[in-house]
Length: 360
Image 1 (tube, rainbow, N blue to C red):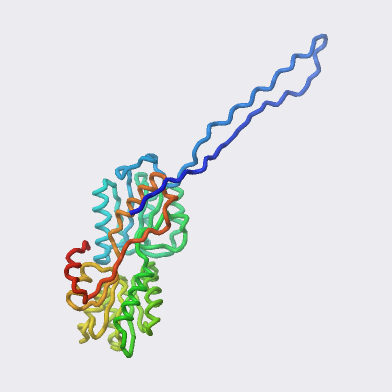
Image 2: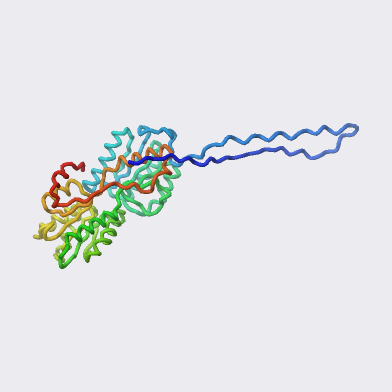
């Protein structure tokens, strides 16, 4: 964990000096002396200096507790084991800390997610918003609306394009690095192979995880001569991952590796390979991303070669960030707070022990 430093904000001083103007001269009345001159009224003192408001700070700052927090969390949907673990992390951590969590399931529908975001902006109880954005683009207006409403936004698990001044920070993985790790491992698996044709099962189009994992994979895989001959979205789904792989297998079986951008799509590919008479992890090397319990079981079964971890248990970090923002410490936070992740192998002699100790 990290420590947050309180930032002192500049004091804005407004000085207001009032001075009275002397009245225009008039002729003295007949047979009388001119009236005695009067002193101008003394200038009033400038008002006492006040501190500028701190963006995102709650009324309880600087002593806000988790019990003061009402967080609106926008989840992408429930597309697999990783997402279920991520949702559980939010709900369980909120209960442990005493946070009032308002949960919104976007059902993998961008329009619904935007509508849910507006609901949290308009909800007078919500004082901080966290979102796992379905797509990387198109968030500028709702982020501006949240800023105008004084509700800080924390990105969880997935990034967005630009607009860094409109959200507090991103808590989550380095998706490009996950792709690089996957490419490096595929190079190892295909070392010595005459052909290095690889198929890529992509997440939903527009998601930062899908975009970045694809970029990272090519950065390292192409260095060893791997050619991505097929690449298509499977929308993070077992069913669609299987359907896409089946369609490719009907066209050609000239494939040496499959890169599933998440575990579920890789599971679908495994089933398609079996039905086509190919041996997963032997005839066709398979790498997935997430490292859920299902991936460990597939490795123990000998059908998945490697899984690259994407840690879903990030809610404690998100809530800690939110509390710091409520206490006026948001400006001290970095724009990215990474999660810690590893790589796991089918041939690891300690795989069963590692799997038994996993929380998701």
